[in-house]
Amino acid sequence: DFEARDWLAHSGWPFQRAEIEPYFQRAQALCEAGPWIYDKGDRAVSAALMQLGPGGLYTSWFQFSKTRDSVLPTYFGHRYEQDLRAARNVTPYTQANVTGIRVSANGQSVERLDMATLNAAGGPDKRFSVKPRMVVLAAGAMENARLLLASNDVTRPGIGNQNDLVGRFFADHPIPRGVATLVVFGGALPACYGTTVTLDNGAIMRAVISPTASFCRTSQVMGSLTTVDTPVELDDTGRAAVITTALALGVEASSAKAYLLGCGMELQPDPDRRLTLTGEKDALGVPRLKLDMRISDSDFTLYRKTLTELGRQLLASRVGMLRINYDHREQWLNAMDWGNHHLGTTRMSNDPRQGVVDADTSVHGVSNLYIAGSSVFPTYGSSNPTLNLVALTLRLGDHLKKVMV
Image 1 (cartoon, helix red, strand yellow):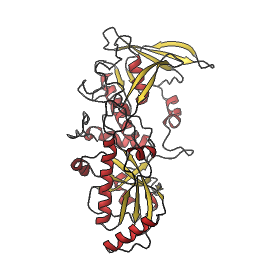
Image 2: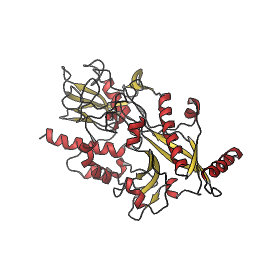
Image 3: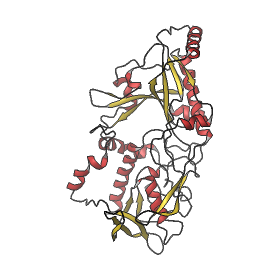
Image 4: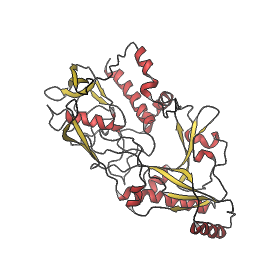
């Protein structure tokens, strides 16, 4: 995910994984995701996993945070509310909305934040300002971009937008359903493929099917997570295909089971998938956003390539077979769901012509303004971004300790 991929435009983070690696364990604890297992799940889960054999895909593992009151994952605001209230060096202000970031006349530092509250009728109530030493904008990929674009009284295109990058490269994780039908000749798959399982050590795990890093490089595909969703009954044509294939492979398939597959996909970076301001304003006078959301045919083509490799491995290992269910764009879009993982609108690069923030997530050209969260991701991976963005934020915290001494 951190690599510059020579076949993928706009890829590459300004640092490698080793730079963020020390923060993953702390992020894991804050996310309440249990012991660090992930791809060691093959040994941790006592189940006969699907043996794909050599090839580009393998069984990888989701690891989830602890469920509280049927809420998964950890709800940070509720979970850490009392800790924030008790902290002597933190004063939280709720319902205090930032309506503008006001920079100096030369645009090189933040001088104040304009703030407002809403009254019971839903309109503006109190307005005030805060004069900060440092500002960390951590409002999510949509609101981060909106505040930067709307704060345009000194820098006309908006703060950090001198190269027209704020709001561009927006991404989410597409989650189309029923993308393929998997037939397993030997019978039912272990439960860990279809749902989460809780291990004795408290880890909450689920098996998924992922492309290896080497397959992504050599085949030039994006990241993906293929999930086993629901059992399905085959029609007469499907049953005949299973019998014919099993006979050709010389395997027993009288107990064969079929499942629909879903997936999480990594989109290619696209500067035209973007957020812009509209002429309409909200109750506090801040311009609203317009989202131009698009997904290219090549995104679907690359994932079909990954599914084709999965089908090849199933046949080669004589474990099962696969039918890809969608051929046309309309079929993919009709089956589409989304992860609601907002990413990329203030992307990271040490080159201001390629990014809004640098490797320390400092906004280019503004000395005391930083951005936290997945809006700084240059590329997106295919899985939930929270662990990575928490690790990035811990790294930012260490950086701020140094610069504020």
